[in-house]
Picture 1 (cartoon, rainbow, N blue to C red):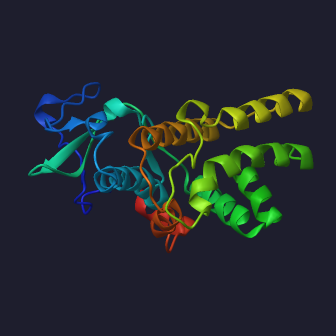
Picture 2: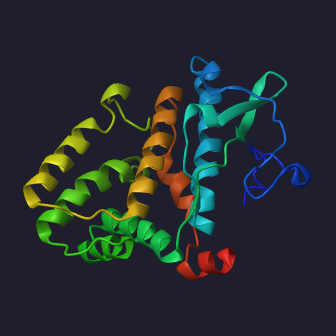
Length: 236
């Protein structure tokens, strides 16, 4: 999925040293991500762009995510003394999503972008939410606008845009939690929880790097020409 991305290295598999329960892979040389937290902005942005691609490209084209994006699962490889890209490590938390779920992610994005409420509702239903009503949709939209916010903003910015890293997502999570308590039990689809957790982890890495990217353009490049059928064909 990533073999044509020169800024992302995936370790090869040593088949003769692997079993059905043990995956043995190549060693990849690299420096810790936080070694670059005080580097020039251009360097930090280069690393963050590679990370964005490593996460969103497999998802938007194949319905696959690396579900554990924390600092220990990446290292940076260099060209001379310059960061050239990232090594993507630790494959114990890979998730394959049905193509329709990926379609729901894109539908929700487009619905929020254009204010198309019918498309937003369709996206939540595709994800597996049931018994939707106006109050529940408004509650879910609080979280959706938080997650999608950087992807809807066509400018270079940090992922949190002025919010302290320690406060990232806290206000929105509190609002959603309180609203759901008032509305009674809500069954949250497992796919939503899994993807949400991974997206927050990825955002935390961007916060540590203090990267400033046009997330809108990066995301729209990743979903350019998207179709549910194409994702299904690639999975097949």
